Image 1 (cartoon, one colour):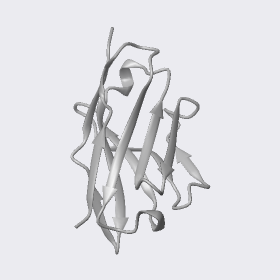
Image 2 (cartoon, rainbow, N blue to C red):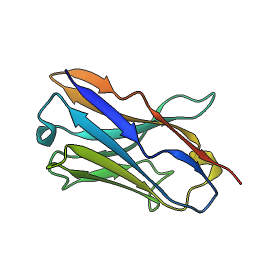
Image 3 (cartoon, rainbow, N blue to C red):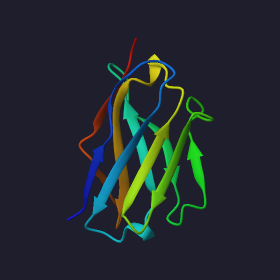
Image 4 (cartoon, one colour):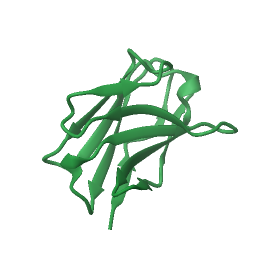
Length: 116
């Protein structure tokens, strides 16, 4: 079955960096778009970044453009989210997501807290 497992979250200070990873299994990773979403307290879940199956094209929410980079390693079935110059408003639970055969799959999420 499809499994997505996020890692790499934690507590950082404003201006610092983190790299999230999402290890995928149960489907042909190299054939699917991958996405990172986040949900902050009291807010709706929002799409942060997406990447095409080959990694050739990426898209970002305006709020993270220039600071976050999504990438993937199809040999390792892993998608990454490099987050630089983190801000308190980036505090959220971050989720890895993909759609396989018309069904959406989500990881359990990982908490990123940006606070001084």
